[in-house]
Every structure is written in C-alpha cells, then in structure tokens.
Length: 121
Image 1: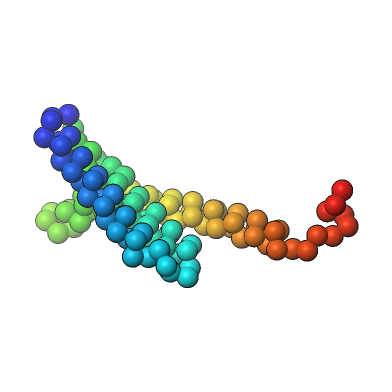
Image 2: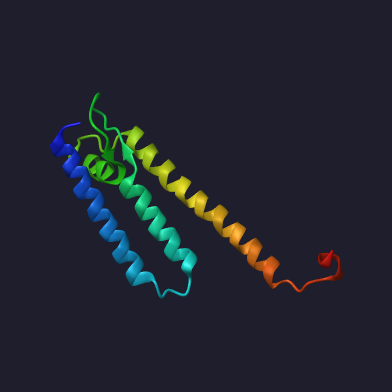
C-alpha cells in the first residue's frame, strides 16, 4: 500500500473517531441508552468497514463513502456488491445490538425479580 494511501486512511479513521466521540458527547444524556448505542455502533460500522470497489485490484475503501461516491458519480449507480455489503454490514451491527439488548433485558428482569425459596438453594 502506498504511503499516501496509508496516511489518507489514518486521517479518515481519526476523523471518524472524532465524529463518534462528538456523537457520544451530545447523546450522553439521552434517556434511552440503547438507542444511543445502536446509532453509534451503526455509524462506526458503516464508516469504518472497508470494501472493494468494482475495479479489480483497487485498494479497500470505507463502505459508506464508496456507496455514496458510486451512487452520485457513476452512471449505473452503486454496484450490487457494494450495496449488498452495506446492507449486510448495517444489518449485522443491528443484529448484534439486538442480541445484546435481549441479554441485558433478561439479566435486568432476573435481577429485579424477587428471590423465591427455590432460588436460595
């Protein structure tokens, strides 16, 4: 990988980290923490997960900027591979947060439940 491309990736990742930190800062007092966590995870995933474009041998590019570039500047719009990657990446992050939310809900209900005689042994 060329040094310029590595430097561009470093600047991009730094910008995304600052963007996510600002998002966390402004959403830290939200009543629904699960929504804040979902939005931040979705943003992190679609901004940081790399994908290959339609050109063979092209370097990896972050998936959301690649999708936006192809949608705006290419004649046929975004390629099916990039669109599918974006959908599956965002869906995977949503599924992870759904599983974590279900586990948290089960643990909270278990903690809030009064202790019965069968739980003591």
